[in-house]
Each structure stands twice: as C-alpha cells, then as structure tokens.
Length: 280
Image 1 (tube, helix red, strand yellow):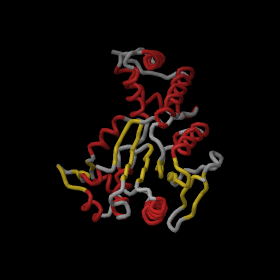
Image 2 (cartoon, one colour):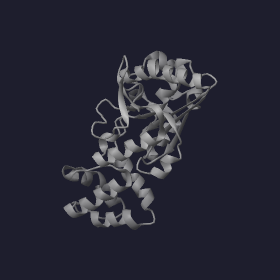
Image 3 (tube, helix red, strand yellow):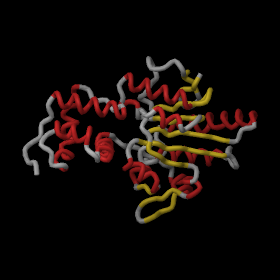
Image 4 (tube, one colour):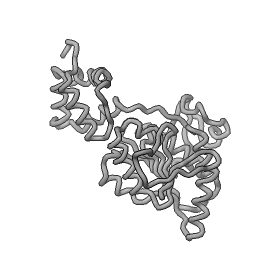
C-alpha cells in the first residue's frame, strides 16, 4: 500500500488534463492542478500505484482503463440538479415553445415530438420536461420521445431508477409532486406515464459518431454543461447540437451560458418569460 503523500507534478498534470480533455472536453486550466490532485489521489492509492505518473499510464494502457475512466468522470463532474430548475425558461418552454411546435407540426401533418436532454445528470431535467409535455395536453396520441444522456454511468443509474429525495424537490410545486410521484421508502418515485416518455443512455458530447445516431430532434436542453468546456470545446458541442436540431428547433442553455462568439447558426428569440436560442 502506498502511504506517502502524493504530489502531482506540472508535467504529469499537463498529461492528465490533456488526456481528460481529449476524451470528453472537460477543461482544467493551470489553476486547477490542486483540484485534480486532490480528487484523484484516492484512485492512485486504490490501485496501489507509486505516483500520478503511473496512474496516467494506467489510464492510457491498462486493460481496465475504460472502467477507471468512468470512475474519473464521476469524480470530476458536478451533478447538482433538481426538478423545475430555472422556472422562467421552463415557462417559455411550456407556454410558448410547445404550443408553437404543436401547431406547426399539426399543419404539416406530423405527430411526433423529440427532445434531447444533454448532460441530464440524475434525470430531474428530462423528467421535468416530460411532466410539462403531459401538462400541456397538446401531444395526446403523439409519438413523444425524450432522451436523457450523460457521460456518467453513476448518475444514469439513479435516473433510470426514478426515485428522488427531498433535495430534488426544492423548486417543485406540491401539486406536481403529488400528481407525478408516489411515495416509496422515504423517497418519491416517478409514475409510469412519465417514465414511458423518457429514455436514458450514455453519451459523450465529444463523440460525433454516436451523436449522429440520435437523428433529428425538435428541442435540445443543455443547461449548465458547456460551462465546463473551453471555447473550442464549446464550439464543437454547439455544432453537434446544430447538426441534430431541425430547422427552427430550439436550444435551451443555462442562464449563465451564451453562444456569443461561439456560433452564428442560432438566433436569440424573445418570449414572454425568457429568451431562447432558435436554429436559424
């Protein structure tokens, strides 16, 4: 067992951060060395490696590298989320975007709605979207598909289970909780009509070939995700969203996120409750 205090050298830090960036776009600048050192030290000790340099080689070449990389992503990503987050934007989605899409598709004779929640974490966002779609009453009898993707297998396991504790309901109206959840062992479980609309899967936003398999979607939610990428990483991910969205489709980012200097493929559309990006 390695017992000495581990220290991450500048050279190995550069190798590790570049490896992580190439894999999934998570960006660490020169001021984040201590954070990476602190979060990965236990992994070095777990595998009884001498130092971070050996750990880098482990990630690069070991037969269990894929499993270990999943563990690294779980450690490095923050999965803070809850139901009905950023209410003004959700009001724009429910009261203006959904009716607009339903009307346009109705005129065209279409009866399908596809929504992608990119970086869905433990599932509160796509489940919220499903509840709002059901609340609208506009899509009864339609083919509705809401896909939640994340790079963390750990959070996807929680999302698929669909059971949540009190912290997930900090912005949830009790009426919504009582309508769409049932109490189970001190938690609340999503009811089946909501679960049937939502599917979850592992997806790396830097994996263009896998993303292409999604086909076209009407709406993309990607809120509080691209803040973890550098400018080039953001551009790459936004281009993926552009390629997946139908013309006129909507991209909903977090309130602290912007497409300024990243893309000219979207226009900012003003709704009564909020502003949302629309594919031109």
